[in-house]
Image (cartoon, rainbow over all chains, first blue to last red; front, top):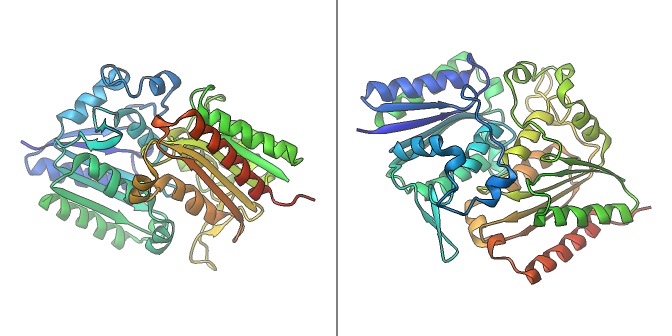
Length: 193
Length: 200
């Protein structure tokens, strides 16, 4: 059975991001997938990689200990879905910190002779569901950093069979109809994912 | 010249700390006024909370980051010194942007006359970005240097158009040598001289 880890980052329970999260989790559960929702704000995740963890970062025998529960949940997953807003052309800090602390050597990648090899290959489906304040054009001009990290860095760590990057740009001026349309789009994509 | 240096590294003995010291020394010898934000040292909280999010559009709600906002308004030169993690900014530094780059401060929201976001930091005329990368220059280029872009283009858009900008990275940090590190520190100094320019 497909087991999906949904990484969700938004501080407000009644946000549009929460509606997208529900669209993802409900659609996948209806397909019979096992869904593990990791709500980083609700779980009070600490995103700060400290001095001791940084020093132990490359020791694959012990580096998972401070975040063992999160590493176990990630390793149990065969699908990984990020649901979050884009802030300042990047992930919210709480989500960036998840990748700083949990996407460890030995968990998501291996260093062999200085080359980065994928180690998250149990993830066969990888997706991002996100919103931008910026227009698509402005995001392109800025180089769209979150799309690049997902589509290149994390994609390479997983080498997934399926990859989706679902984004609603220019969020501040999107009306109710556009928002509803994007939720429907996300549901459709998750049905086929 | 008024420089705000935002420094982010968990270890006081890191190479990034050495880069920070070169940057600061260059600024001091140019006669600049300097304010330093040491995010780890100060225990900055990078998480934008529910309360902050709900008050996000109201500049009066900036109370918990009053000092950061005041320094951002005060400076004409903005410098970031940090390690690159997962091709991006450490969460600590990303959270500084999330919490301090507020509407009404860093940018102006769209209104009836303006369809889109406008820059709010046009008093800042110099941007310096200094980092280290575990990845090679080639791999960083393939991934698209997201961290660099978040700062030079994302934040850079909010500054004075055609501001002076410098960037320096030490790549393959995990296999760095005494020589490569010394060469990088010299590069940082040269970039700082270019950033500072001729000071009256």
